[in-house]
Image (cartoon, rainbow, N blue to C red):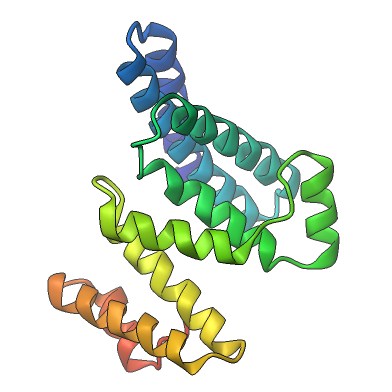
Amino acid sequence: MIDSLLGVAVSRAQDALARSDTDSGRVRSLFWLGTALGYRARQAELRGSYWRAARDAKGMQDALEHAQAADSTCVDCLLGLAIGDYALARAGFVARIVARLIGLGGGDADRALERLRRVSEEGILARSEARWVYANALLREGARGDPALREEGLRIIGELAQQFPDNTVFRRALTTGAGGP
């Protein structure tokens, strides 16, 4: 069911892109195409379809980079790019080699964290999601040896839990020691 819905989202974004006759329409369509492909890549990865995940991740990266090139103010476009960058930076050796071979690059954790921070502060459509992802990246980085980053991640999750009190994911993250999603 999820795959079907994501397939529809990709198709709709591609159709909107084909029909776009303005720069802003193309940027908006590229953003939604990149977003849909990013979620579909994550879903494919969860199912163990690594080649499909890599292909969709590359499509996401291309769409969001084109959107950013056309409109540098598309801060929300940075979310998908940051997630991909962070995932590749922290992936295993073989995964990084495969990512380089198919054109995804090797990842850069510092650049990813800066992009996540920027979207979490300046984003319009993806601000809350960026805050959640940024907080979890900070927790992971904190586990690598910087307790200040862990504390910052917990602080952000605490703010999200206050802002969205009915969201059990945020509350659970705080009560279980914020082990991440």
